[in-house]
Length: 140
Image 1 (cartoon, one colour):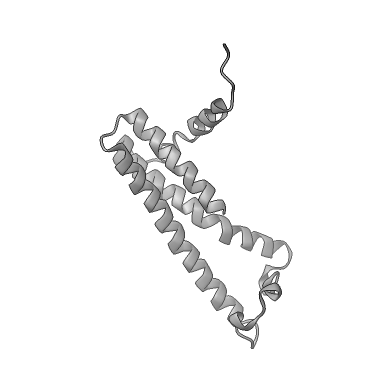
Image 2: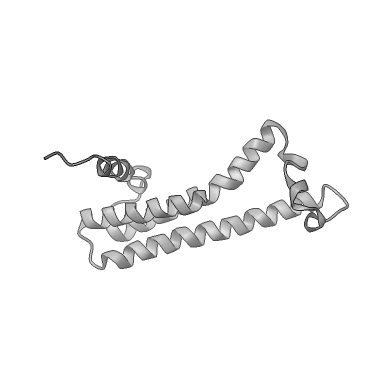
């Protein structure tokens, strides 16, 4: 769910950046950046599932798949403050890595700027300002 919302924001971010940079094949680069976001997120979610399966299968004699769905909640290492941080990492890292990958596509091929931390995340402030402005009613 979080990844889907972030993916929409990334597509809008790439579109606004491509418009501002007057890039040829605007929609092509938006699609490439969005697909890159999706692929990176998909691969990292699969890696997370693999890591969770490896960790959880070693905790008990019963396989992870054999446990009822309701019993999986807060089992093993996901209890306490450390478990909360671990859950947050597994949930938020794939979309964040996807944003970084889309930002690299944006810098390298859309805006053609030098790669730095500020250029990778550049334009995000303008994205949210544009969203904020879109909710204002026009005055007559």
